[in-house]
Image 1: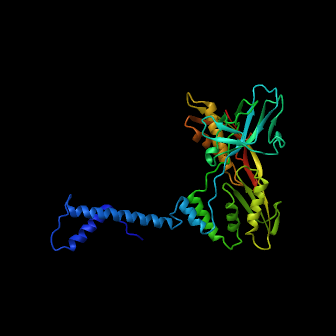
Image 2: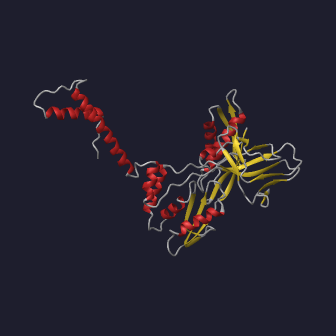
Image 3: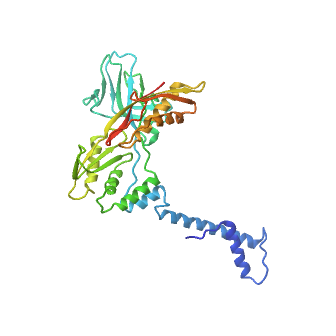
Length: 373
């Protein structure tokens, strides 16, 4: 362990050393030449001490940060999980729907303040999708169409609130306006240094092991935001079957895509116990229709605060683990925390009932609607 010294201590120790080596009394008063030399030497020593600390911090995972931590982990073949772009649906509409129109893939829209941009992406299951035109067709007499978009910049900044995407960054003939009826979710920043170090511990501890922690580490290394439930000696139907384990995964949406199921299966295959069988399944979505009434302080806008409460509740529900219940009392707390103007919360209900919503073991709660009166 280094015995660190500050500038004053360095000067004092240097003065004591030179005086001890001299047979005569030295002038070390403020402004003397010898004191100036000692102070200059101490400044250099202080700088060298700082450089030593910098080198030591970069040679340990516990103290490295940013790119230095990435370099340290790369020696073990481990990389930081990247940021994820937010996705959602926007509604393109027009004032006069007399002619057909086309929303091309790649068309850009922006938030009202111009800080966040989104691009239209291809989703072939959308009813308006036209492969021949590489876009979303709006027939004559149809006033609007809902299409999926993705944030051009990754991270949580893309998780915008409802009705904030209102600018057409790409001119589209026959289209007059755009908006997002619901909040965007799924945007995640790059894995933090703290989370990266924690995953490294599991990575090391699970090497050469066919254990639940090894399977969990394999899943956690795919992307951020994945939660899972591992049921040992249980088949997909919930029956007891020795040597079979079932993994239920969720990416925060309640309906993970088939590509993610395939990726998780491949990761588990690399670490599963020999002689065992397994299945990877999505969770059972349990829709939650939430309603509440709020009392606001004078001059507060119900429209603005309702959007804040809706976003807070939706984001909280997205973090619920598989099998986790939704306490109705937590909704009141979220409403109070959403804005200081909320003075009272009443008439709370989930699916028309004033009670907690408890899903089955492999179920995950999703926000179907949030109505704030």
